[in-house]
Image (cartoon, rainbow, N blue to C red; front, side, top):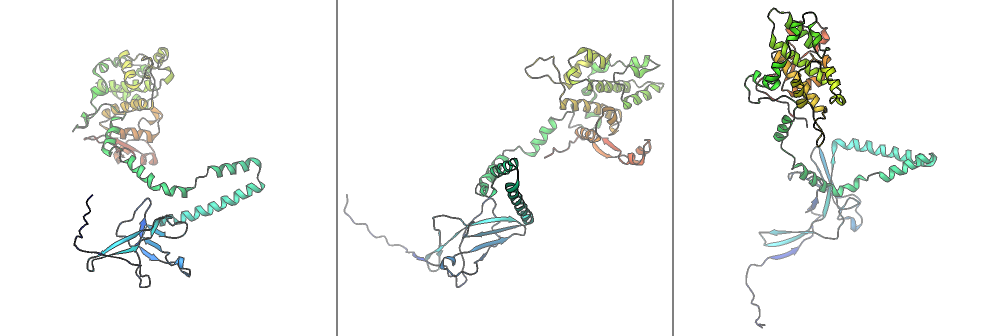
Length: 416
């Protein structure tokens, strides 16, 4: 090893000095503040207070920090139960450029607690409620039965001390923030909701309302040709008796009007009969969907191709089970209703009374409005002329709503 001595290196020298805070002169600070959970903005002014009656030397360093943002109060102190206990002493170095000295100052650590001002009364109410429960439990322990005493002890064992959660509040806050950051954006949620709607195929880019739900997507050309409309034309005595579903006022009145004209509107008759087939298929009991006898009794002489398409379009088969087994789900039930409403919209020039089929289908009006909105319709008040055409009371006319489909197609935003 070399025995040469280290050479002194000449350079700028900085003086170090330890300074005590001049409390008598009114100089306070600095302080190290800890904010669990939420941090106020940097411009929030904090006031420093010292408790009264500081006779003992140990109380001279006690300080209280306080700030008020209008809605939230921040209060902290370096003494008492809410103080931050530790074995470390912190100092802050301050470099004075003029004197070229570094001054060290004590920096007590103070934990700041927050209080929402609007919830102060609620907390006082909760404390009074706690006092009532304590008194009630004391009476139960003194004069209650064995069963009541067991209940009191069970509640006490299972009670959660909320104050113990303060230490993990910041961890929970960070965990929630990490989980919520992985949530999909609002546009993606809306796209997924639109895709899951139980509605017929649609053209979102259609500029004409009649092109939104095209007829070939509602009724295939093969189905359209097989609708047995001639049975109504041939049976002049009671033509509606051949329909599988007899309880639809909308379909029955529409068919009577179409059949009473000299030149029969065959297109309208086909669509009304198809709606009637859908209504009949909807009332088949779920457990009887795979029973040919029950299906034939309810559906009557509906062509087999139409019935097969109904099964494929409006029922579901259990995964991994027999494909011949079919069942209704809430979504498939709504799908049948949306098909009925979409066809009815085309018959009514895309402006229909929203309550026209509530009695026919035994539905609540809110459910009907929800499904029309799902199709992209807007629910609005009926006009004076439309109200005058209906033989109803003033209150019923006031409650009348119209479902109107317009282009371009827009769907309601998904609920949060």
